[in-house]
Every structure is written in structure tokens, then in C-alpha cells.
Length: 427
Image (cartoon, rainbow, N blue to C red; front, side, top):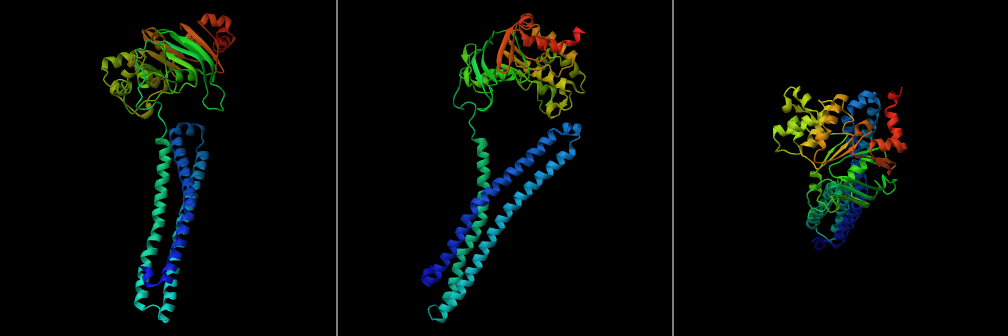
């Protein structure tokens, strides 16, 4: 339609429009890059805040508030600077587009006036052309805001997609085997690394844990004890070798079925916000109060639960912050026992217990182990004296295995660990 009024003026409008489009296209990559920097800076700032809140007790205990405040201020400054960079690009784009729009108006009016003086165009046609040219340039200036919103939304979706599109442990439409589990665990030439560049956490490990036995795992820190139990419950995929449960490859088992038959009590336990009864019954919401009390009694928790203001209906804060570490650990043991797992893994489960509570758990160990396989990871070798078998790990390899007395007489690593813990008895 513009060409019907004046071809030369229409060409001028198209030229300005092309320049505007080039400005917008040139700023998009820069805007996207600065926006990503802003999102990463905000992510670091929020992560630091959450970390500080969760570790507030440690921060106050170490008197590191000034250091944390300084780091927080630096992260806030970095985020503010990134936000300023994004705003500067946005403002600059709008300013340039606005300038081009005004220059186009001046150019159309000025050049159109010359055409009117030369009788090549009427005044009415010039006014109409100027109004129509605004219908071309105004949307271009509005595109700047749309591009900014699109880039923000697009980058947010892509960053969210990096999390949402991660492949699950197993494809949701693939169901594994769901056989009855007796509790025999076999490792055969297992090699596992947490990353390609890391040394092996487990190096050619082969062992058999008979069903119904109490099996101990000991070794220095970093020897691969917890890694062994993680592979046992399918937390990580097997890289080399094989892990079998009752003769079935763990790769072939249905993971929910496997984990419903494997109870785990870790050194760092987590309690949910809710009552004591709800926390113990988290694995079995349909459990009766009698079953919950029985599990708590076996874990040595019933005694202190009865002393709470409302007993089993006492409300716990998130993380169980209104309980001591030992009390949290005992509730975690009770929660694992309630489900009656065929395999029970105690990964430093008694490390936070006081001697009296540990004695209760040890005294109930025979009842706890009845009808199931118990795998105990512990630095306290005294808690493994009665185990049916003990395996000694060192730097991811099996050094020796056998009963307590056998290892004490022939395994230097085990003997050193035992002597270090019982040095006071020799004095």
C-alpha cells in the first residue's frame, strides 16, 4: 500500500525497517548471554542462602558470620551487576529503536515535502503515507519487548528442561522382575567409579552374603564401605561386574520392589515434619500403633518416646531438630524395621547412639536379624564381634574376610583398627 503512494518513500521505510531488524537480531545473542549469566548468579546467590540457613548452627558455632556476610554481599553484588547488564542492553535496544523511529519520521516528512514541492505527491498523500508508515515501525519497536520476554521464558524453559529431561533410573514403561527375596547377596568382580577421572571406589570386589546372616563391613574412611551398600540397593547402576540378589541380576529387578525389601539406616538420617508415629510409619502408612510401638521398642526408642509431651503424637520439626542426634537415629532404625525388610543395611547406624541406646540395639540384634539378612557398616569393631562374617576393605579392595577371631589373628589391617579402638584396655 505504501508503494501506491510513493515508491521512493516506501523504499526508505523498508530500509529503516531492515536496519531496525538488524539491530534487534544483533542484540539477541548478547541479551541471551547476559541473561544466562544473570540466572547463574541468582542461582548461586539463592543456593548460598539456603546452604547458610541449613548450616546456621555450624556458622554460629564457628563464628563465621562476618565471612558468610562478606561472601553473601559479594554474591548479591554480582547478581545486581548482572541484572544491570541485562537492563542496560534492554534500555539501549529500546533507545536505538526509538531513535531510528524518530529519524524515519523526520526523513519521511522532509523527503515527502520535497516531493510535494515538486508536485510528485499531494499533501494528503504525504499525511496518509506518514500515518501508514507508523503502522510499520511501531510494531518493530514493540518487538523489542516481545523478544526480551521470549528470551527470558525460553532460557527458563531450557534450564528447567535440563533437569526435567534427565533420564530416569529405569524407563517408566519397563518393569523388572519381582521375585520373592530371601536375602542372598553376591558381588562378582565389581568395579565402580563415581566419575571417569576418579580412582575406583570399588576395585574387583567379589563376595557372597548368605541369606539370614549378620554380615559386617569394616575399613578405613574412603575404603568403599558405603559404596558397597549403595550398589546393593540399586542407588547406582553397575558399571563392571555383577551384583545378584538371590541369583537375580540387580539390573533385572524392579527397583521399587527391590527397595521395598531392603531397609536402610544411614549415619545421616532425615525426619519429616509430622508426629513421631507418622515418621516411624512413613514406610507403612497402614501400620497399627502396636506395630509401630514394637518397631520402636526393638530400636530402643520406645523409652524416650514415652517421655515426650504427647508420646507418639508429639509433633517433630522438619529434620527432627527438636530431638537429639541419638534419638533421631533410633527413630530411623524403627522406621526401617517397621517394613520388615528381607535385607537390612545399617550404615554407621549406631554412630550417634549413646552407650545405653547402643547396648539396647545390640541386645536386640538377634531379634532384629531374625529371618533377614543384616549388613552392618561400622567403625566400631566391637559392634561386629558377634557377626557371622566380616569383610575388610582397603582402598576399594577386599583385604580379608572371616569371623572376628580369625581376622584378629591373621589380618593386619583389621588388627590395627581393633588395637586403635581398644588401646585403653591395654594400659
